[in-house]
Length: 378
Length: 215
Image (tube, rainbow over all chains, first blue to last red; front, side):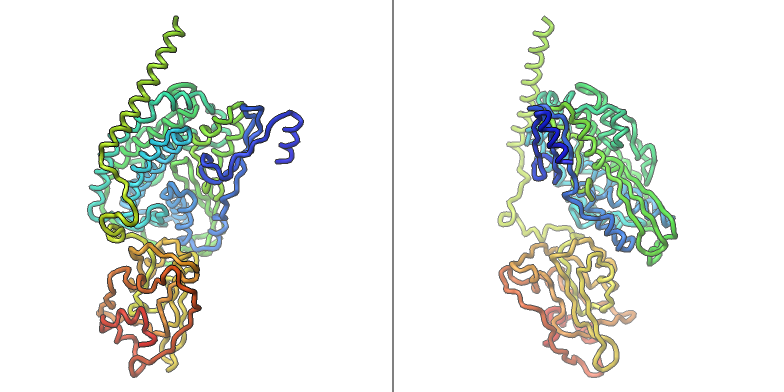
């Protein structure tokens, strides 16, 4: 493929430029081969696979519950969702009921995790564009969230919290109040964050009308999550394919509306993430208010041996639909686990969306898609 | 005329929003900083500020270990090595070896949940380093030990505060690597004791973890 690119480049008098794999704004180890006519790109081809660890294959050699810590490594910025998707798929395979309290706890930690992930997403996007301060504001808030989750499950990044059948720990004494206190301080800080960067004219001018992805293209490339909603497609698994305790809560699905330019530009995707954090705050408040009493883990057999069959569990992760397709052959280890992650599709659209873009705008495109390298490769 | 006014509108807008952002940044100059200088300028040791559930380096309280190997089976990446052997008297078993490779552990906590007596646990210790990676394999048993046998109605041997056992076993960072070799088995009690002595006296705790083979 590279040879073909070179040949074409020579014949068309084009320039080949290599970006990555070690580049600060590729958000991990991804490589882009850019064919450009001066500053204008003809296309940027993503080369993935630098972070491939064979997680799907590892699953085939491990008993069902032992694979949960590995799912943390699928998406290290939002590991709760990765745990949740796998647990849901195995629960469907086994046909077990999860206690209400566990479902509520799952929702609370997932939404906390969504805030943490989006803070990094919007902060890193601002940083790639050249504003360093908002990133530090995002990191500061995320640190508080990490402390909360650390108190709950003992880890700051690789939680291993949502297990097959429930969750591993109940709320310790006083964590409820701590989360509420965080939410109370977070909302004014979010307004401050908006004043700091979201309305900033430089950011708006840099992102608006850049890297436009229209609704049809977004759907045909299989974009999910905030990237899809940024293009104006009204699709959210939490509402449209309800799972866990989400039907109990009131929240809005945030959509891109062409806030300062064309529908589906980089700024829309930025705004969708900012708004989703506010929706997450709403969901957490409702879940804390309605948290039922009871068990946190369902009744499980000592050894999980699902009957022959397959199941699919998908959650609305911070990066969109994160699905696990688990096939059982009747033993205590899965026959096959396939992970469907949003970042992979988001990377695949780069080649299409980068046509005719300036090289400097490629950074905006990648940052606005909020891809995370381990989720692309797994 | 319209384009000229748009131009000045844009300039004004840019100046206002940038100034607003700068004002936010400036206001943070007068607020309490949240950065803590680690490790030498923390108000109290970081170890003491960690929550109870913090998943740090693993440790085993050997006088309460039944040598059931449930932890080794639960570990997804084979970090724990438990070796047992038949007791020379022909009755019961001996715990020959209990190693945890802390350089390989991913701190998922599955082993601690599998442990029936709670002798295996995560500690607030998180600092360990070594010039030779093999030094990060912690050997919790020096020589053959009679495993603990749980009797109904009797409490599991009390363990020292979390972290003490493993902190004592961690080697200095520049220690030379010396291959582990098992110590001699010394009969601790007549009649092929079932570890009851260790169970009865919490004073044995320290010895059980650091040098039960020699004692």
